[in-house]
Length: 133
Image 1: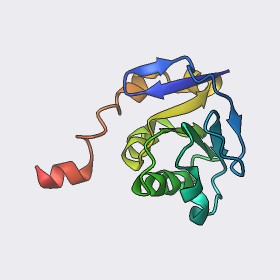
Image 2: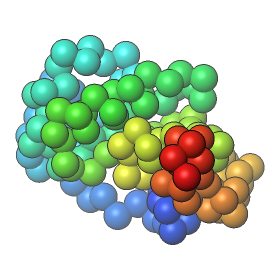
Image 3: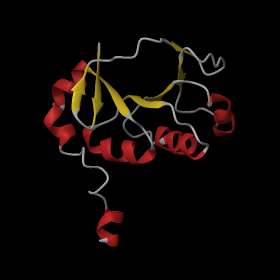
């Protein structure tokens, strides 16, 4: 099972549309993207209702770049980070354009909800806001 993390804490997954690979872009399904997706192919995903980007390791930041590029291309659907995203990375995930993070039950047990909520005020607690302020 998995846990969905949002700005309000832990929740069950409410996505019922299923997921398909990147090659097919059927509007009824979410699209799974690996972290090594070619950025030049992102424009094909404009109609996907959900895009889920894989994080195979907490040290692999390519998913943050893909999310940011999707948002810059005008993607307005639901954007989810999935995999090895740590509570410390939640603010970066949100600033990159992700709406939510999907983690395993095991990670949720090691990093409980209060650790994620401590980073949920991602719009105000960053060095750019401190420089502006």
